[in-house]
Image 1 (cartoon, rainbow, N blue to C red):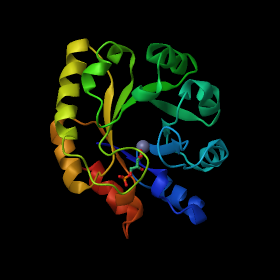
Image 2 (cartoon, rainbow, N blue to C red):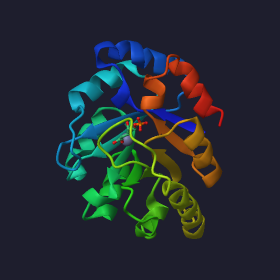
Image 3 (cartoon, helix red, strand yellow):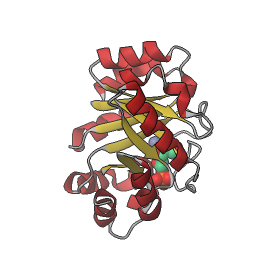
Image 4 (cartoon, rainbow, N blue to C red):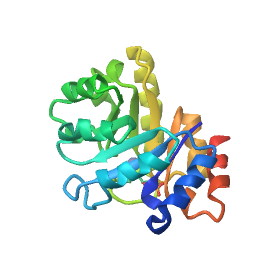
Length: 214
Ligand code: DX5
Ligand code: ZN
């Protein structure tokens, strides 16, 4: 299982310590939640913080933009060293263009779906995607309860990926723990985001290892 701990739940007073923990752990990526207070009812952090994270973190950055008009910030995200740039389906009027621009900038292109958006909306863009990020909570906050209907969406998406000949990785974000993680693995997920689970654990490294070995 690919594991992407979410920085949103880190202790910002000790960011360096948390980033060094990630570096030394079995985490595959670091998930970075950027929020604008418009697309989601919360604001997290922006590019100056990402610049710092880029300096310290040795894991690939999996950037999840919960913002309107994400196409305006492709160069900024690239300059922060992002490996994957995830934009919301619901935030892009011209999704095909945005995906091509992300790839032309040299990043992997990910598209994120809110819980109420069906996976069939991605049929025509799937062959162009490197990743699909399925939200298993309504985006905006860490520590929320997993929406069980996501399991069916993962299965549907797995079928659609096979049908369309896509190579997209399936990543799930929100309410992931050992139990929901195991269910998601069985449903066909390739990657899991985990914020609260990792950073509220007494042993964060062990929490990452638990997901890794699913
Ligand atoms: C929610 C964010 C998530 C969040 C997940 O809007 O996209 O990445 O950090 O947090 P947990 O794992 O605590 O549900
Ligand atoms: Zn996220």
